[in-house]
Amino acid sequence: MNLPNYFLADLPPEASLTGPLITEACLTMKRNRVQFLAQRSTSDIIRVLCEVAERWQKKTNPFRLYALEEGPQQTGFSRATLERGIDDFFRQITEENLELLVAQELGHAKRLDTFSAGKEERIGDRTSMVTGPDLLVHIAAGNLPNPAWMSLILGLLTRSAQFMKCARGSSFLPRLFAHSLYEEDAKLGACIELAEWAGGESELENALFAEADCVTATGSDETLAAIRSRLPVRVRFLGYGHRVSFGYVSREMMSERSLPKLVKAATEDIIAWNQLGCLSPHVIYVEHGGQLEPALFAAKLAEELAAREAAEPRGPLDTHSAAAIQTRRAFYEIRAAHLPDTQLWCSENSTAWTVIFENETGFQHSCLNRFIYVKQLMDQEELLRHLEPLRHQISTVGLAATDETAPKLATRFAQWGITRICPLGRMQKPPLTWRHDGRPALNDLVTWTDWEKDSV
Image 1: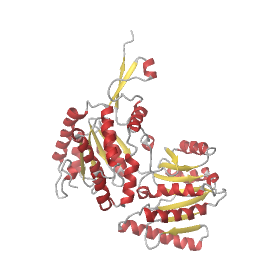
Image 2: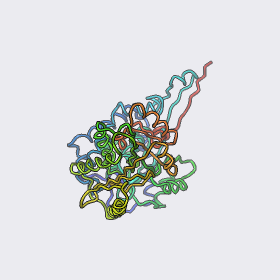
Image 3: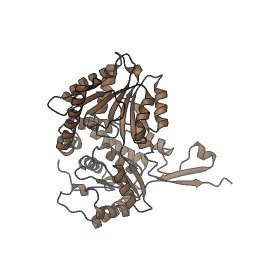
Image 4: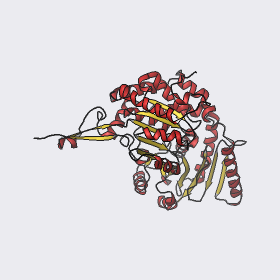
């Protein structure tokens, strides 16, 4: 597939980007926004997005085929992992889901199109409208495509021109999505720009930030602080920092009947995008005191990961990542040989998957790439005491509990500061209406205008 040079990211690697070139690209998009995007209706934008998403789900779609053929080399994900990730994401882009998102975030489906009023506003004889930024800049993380795809969708809903800056070598999947939008509606595509360069290119980034009205960024806390310090005061900044997640299985779920389903659910969360997202579990905590011992959960999880590796392989790793897994395995092999409450299961002759079981409750960062800890504990309060150093750094808990115990567990997690609780097995599949890090998706981007009417 030969992609036309619609975006700066389409230029050959030897092409040189300059500050004036970035400035001109931003100004061009702003002009295109006024001409092609600003007056489009929400329903029209949603229609285009749904048509693009529907095409991505078709087996014969050229963009999908290209992503699956070239993606393993470009991204490091196996074809099976890419196919699953593409389907999971694009099947959520429906008219119903996008309308629900707008209504949830803005209180009225037409709020982006015209002045609208909900019940409370009508009582006060007041109405409101929201507008998106003229130029929305995204500093995208390089590991997963979903956040980048979703950022572009949100920007189109707010009628914003968008410039997405990708890390060096990570624009492949965002660029394919942008090209599919361009093919579906060239006028919308003309309001999007993508480029990639290594972070810290001051000339390029200063030119970009000077034209921006709002900047979103995903990265380490240090990266976010550096970006924030360089933005003009007038620019709105939305930063999404490093987060970790874990699974939690209550003792009532540890039965012969529930165990197979639990293990399959946990495996889904571990293999999705090779465990590389902030929503992926590093640890699965299992309460002690059920019908079955937590160690059995770990053993069955190892069996399931081995079976899934045959059907949906992880794919090759770079030398550094593979060495990290080998080193960690070696440590636990020695530990398991001397401590009866530590056990290790792993793939033979590869680093494809690893399961570590231990009786130590403290949170442990995984090597990722299908490397998972299973830890037993007495109860939720024990866990929260150990998690205290990570307060406000936890993104998601994948919860497996009965209808009787789940509300109490979820309430305590929420009060402690965790912003997303979902069933185990759906950690890497947040709904379209998910509030990322507990913040609204659309509402953080827009500016509200209130119209107080004359009631005389």
